[in-house]
Picture 1 (cartoon, helix red, strand yellow):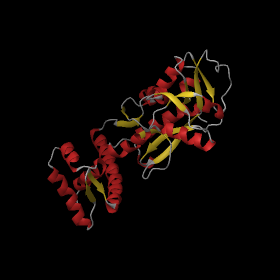
Picture 2 (cartoon, rainbow, N blue to C red):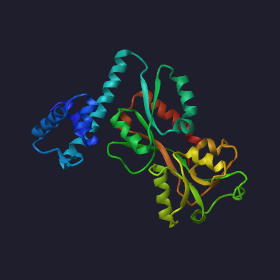
Picture 3 (cartoon, rainbow, N blue to C red):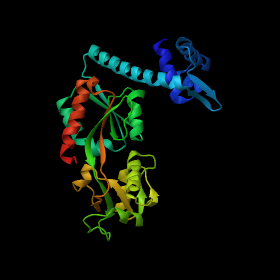
Picture 4 (cartoon, rainbow, N blue to C red):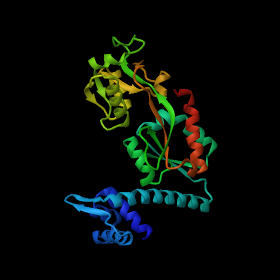
Length: 299
């Protein structure tokens, strides 16, 4: 059993295809199969099952894939740290984020960190969801991921940083704009701009509706991110239920009023890492800097 065997096996499990991994690695499908067969001979059980549309891991395969993925992630991170030490540089902090995360949560922290750690580079990898941000920690050896906190994830530590109350975004001259807040049951009668279908925030919001007995809320328009929802609300296209971003709360969205919806539990955003104890000093410093700047905005 070699490290290459394990790397190829993990890739096969995630891709669900021997040929796709062969194309990615620039080798033959037979070569990929040999890696998997070598592992199967060593452990004495089958690790993948061939199906009409590709391959899937067996029960034993899933067990090995999870353990191998965690070990490879930790090893890759350690090798990167050793390389940085050998080169004597300040190194880099690599962060997985959503599309608008830096602007909403990290702008001031980035400026502060660059001033105090000029020798460290910051590398941001944009992902489409919190789930993909968490996956990137293992797949790409990133240090940190900024996520909407959710259910526990095996091999990942989550740490909440800021609570985001839900608000209703309305045009400043809308009939509702003079209200102090909105009751949960009122949402059932509105046609709202919908949040991204597969986003963590949409999942949390739908779960809150179900918990409170609020009927499914109709949506005339669906958008890809919170900023677009607020932009359309400001243009009078409709109302939008969104988590209150720090900048919005400070009056940074002209032409839009944000009305609290007290009945909805706040969304919690924060850090996800493989192991806090394994973070480099620079990565921990950046995480702490972001947390410090957001502390006044916390719940």
